[in-house]
Image 1: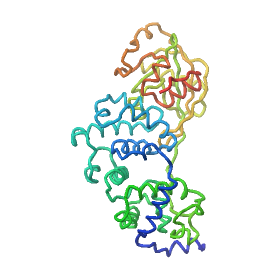
Image 2: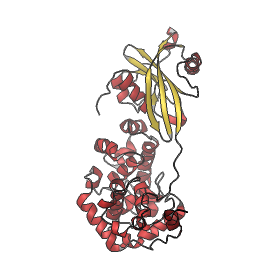
Image 3: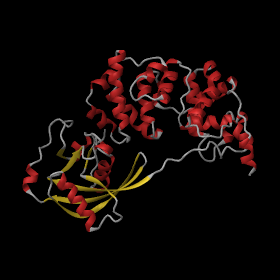
Image 4: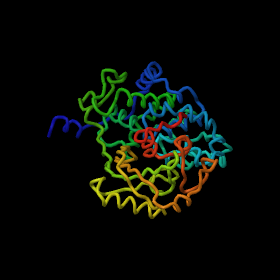
Length: 385
């Protein structure tokens, strides 16, 4: 058994984070914390939006979209009164569209149950649809001073190292140990500031690999650092990532492209995309591959002849790494062309398919693969937001 393994086997973490250490961490955060737009407000709705946006998305990506999103939906009532398609369109490009649907449903629930005011207690926040323990604790602590620990990846990792807890913080017993570890500190310090300070520490200093302990304001109290195991804990279970091949067809008519909504409801519900299907075939250029794509289009009611492969789009969706092979296509049957309704003046009209210019597509909730196909393969630049 290695020296590190022996050390972790007998590790007894301290009972609590000292209140004075927590205060030092808050002082550090107030001095060097990043200037982010959602940190300039205590509006519960604005903070709630930011927390949902930040789930599984990089801070820099959210920073570039947050203010324009808030301009479009500045309060709960505006979001609740908007059609879902409008919310999805504004969310387009941020990915993980289930969050946008959840935010829309959440706004409507707040209007119905709380008169449009974000509730103040942790229990009421947790009772809202789609609001989990992390987001409820983050909003409650930052906006209303609720002494609740918000455990995301950065917080869990930093606290496990400070406390010397080796196990995976995603496990419920470990989360409870972390909550007990910071309970006194949350009660004696501003809980919102402490949560954000720990988040900042995990994001910028106590990073997953090669933590920058020399820059840590509380490294002298870190159990993992004292034992020399800061690179080894916490243990985590890596999520499996599946490589997926997709096939798509670009069909153009008079500067407009044929897009579908709802052809793959389990993956891109309510999102517009080119005719697309999953493929388990190894090679994207074989006759069998193009035949499957033609069969898919025929199943949608279209007689299409496929041309050359235009290129490949790569993107990620949850635990899927997607390689989408895009082919040129043309309608073989004139009757099929006439079967399609012309684009509605209302870009959010509930239709299954339509012909759209790139500018019209930019106003739709557009799937990431379709957006990348327009921008990268077809040379079309979507209108700025």
